[in-house]
Image (cartoon, rainbow, N blue to C red):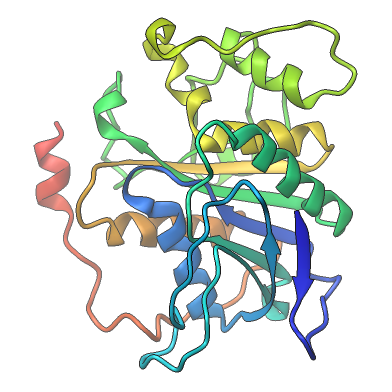
Length: 274
């Protein structure tokens, strides 16, 4: 993976928190990063060229009118006011290449001096095997490497729910740990699709590979996750965006300049899931 800095731009070393999406159902992580980029006024400083990302190209993603500025598969933005770097992934990883991609982006984060990585992603409602507590509204779940069991005191104080399905001794989580740990001599294999069980759903997702890769590089990493379904996922994106702001060490003010409607009422969707 090569980081290409745009002509005339410079990288701000103070932007030590990296926020990026992990592609999943509803593209909620990508929508949330788009909201963060547009609301913080983050400036694009370059892009990451990776052989494992499928190619794509598009027009300017944030201007109210197309201006002819090309959007690329993996762009890097910086918001000095919040000391944050944002990486927006616009195309999927080639099939079977997620481990390689996670290794590359973890190397980028480590070599560029990032101290905290926040991964935003979503989980499939249909995979949910416990009742959601909706008394406090839609819930965000987290996974952190602050403690061995995935717990993080800061996230607990913020009211996030720990992803209880994380089991560092589970076969798929152990596999991810082994492939990113250069000192691991144990040869493990990931189950085939026919052998996957319900408990293997979570470590099979892109956020799990990213979490394991950043963890192996010695970086603090926090995954923020919400359950959702395909459809109108703007409320889910707002939810992840707000929670990511509270999770960061540096919090800036946000104005949703490009979204003109009020927050969408999700009560019907929530009640239908009970």
